[in-house]
Image 1 (cartoon, helix red, strand yellow):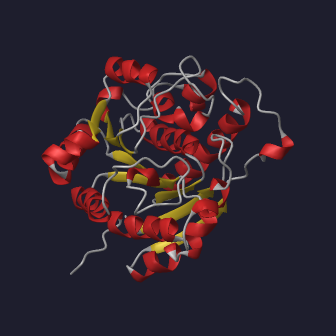
Image 2 (cartoon, rainbow, N blue to C red):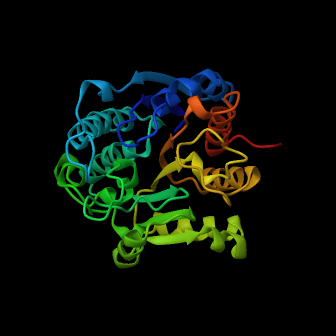
Length: 302
């Protein structure tokens, strides 16, 4: 598939730190569209999904702030993603905070569900994102999207498009975790989610971890969604993220992960989230997001 459809989701209601709503613009400014075209892709930019603005709403319940607004954005986003697949395009989604992953995965899952096929999920993140309204310490939905994709949490998120889970936990893989809440740990263990922490990457190397992850996510599936939170990388590499955690992957490890994903040939969608230009340094994180996307779509050194 040589056609890519880009859609931005400038949502910042899932987190307390403002500014991530400008992420899609920052990534576009870094030349994403032109650089993909230079690689031979037919690129269509579908613009942005309409999103609610915090100043126009009250956050509602403290256990899931802006739940209604986030869920509505994800429902609309899922339609964009589904339409891209029906048009034989690979969806490339630009966030926004990580709560938008619920919409991306829902759209891909619904498309393949109609074909009676399942999907897998590869989630690259410093955090587990496996909280629910019952376990969250902050009420921020960007800490809940992986749980929602796997069938845990608020029904407004879990049952977008009327079915759950979007991905069976045994076909989902979290890579790069190094900051997991205590109550999340129990959900991760019980769910059946495969988790490769930074220790696993340290001990086994990125290549071995990615090969096993892709085997898990592709087993019995049409392929897998790829969700990249830029805090997957060390803050030295990606300073413009909302929740940086020391000890992340290096620049080259991140590129290797993307290169291996391309070579494996089973990526159904790609999303890049949590780029925050307000706290970035000279658009460094947005430029990095573009570079990682190019690697995932096949850019090679030689």
